[in-house]
Length: 283
Ligand code: PMP
Image 1: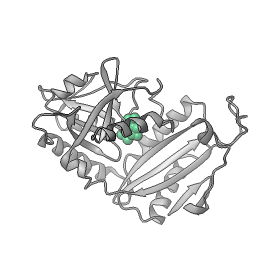
Image 2: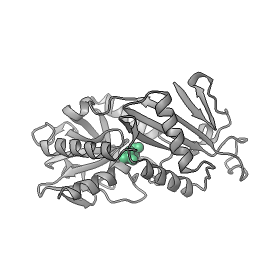
Image 3: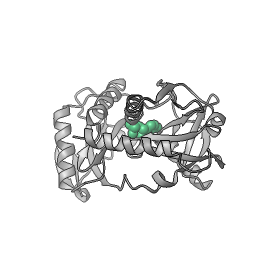
Image 4: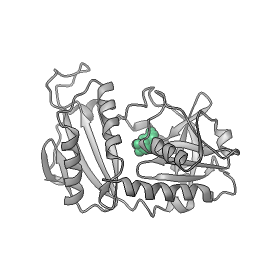
């Protein structure tokens, strides 16, 4: 596999980042994951817009513009022959002597990109649905910034697996914030799609906003509001959205089946149409 590090395309075993990189020492970095379908990038512009927002919130600067970033994404997809999968991009505040104070301005950011092949369209969870368990949301309070500080989501996912489930839905103040790496949704008994409003408490998912716009175009009602785990358990359907999972049904929460315990056809249809639309718009 060819990866990209600070201007160079290298075989992965020849690519290196400093031991003093602040991404490594302080989780001082941000990332994006852009889906690849048919060798093309899904929603690239919105992923880069969110990257710049994350960088801005952390006073980080990146000397590479979006045209160059697009060229790097495409070059890696082409070199690695990715038809279906993702491009991962990470920017950290660069390498400097270990100090809580940020390094001097002018310290170059570290920019790393790599690809992953993944069968996204035929993911088993699309057909079978996900089983989730609720866990307390113990992450920091700026989850709107897409930082590489992913230890708690990783711990929550492991706890979910230990309990025989696929993933965790995180709870704060009695309401669901989001999944460990996805936004959480339900379909209520008035056929309204419900997902939590944006704030510092959740990541502004690119797929969340794309699905919201698409569902409205399709004549569905969408409401942005918080909901409890009990409301989700009693809903007509529950699902998650993320770049690599699109729309994926949730069929069980804390051992309790949602609806008849199988993916609701309306949600499967939403997934399929949304994927068609994403494919059509990919660049
Ligand atoms: N929330 C969290 C915490 C995530 O990690 C992700 C995926 N990175 C999402 C939501 C979904 O965001 P997106 O649709 O941009 O992939």
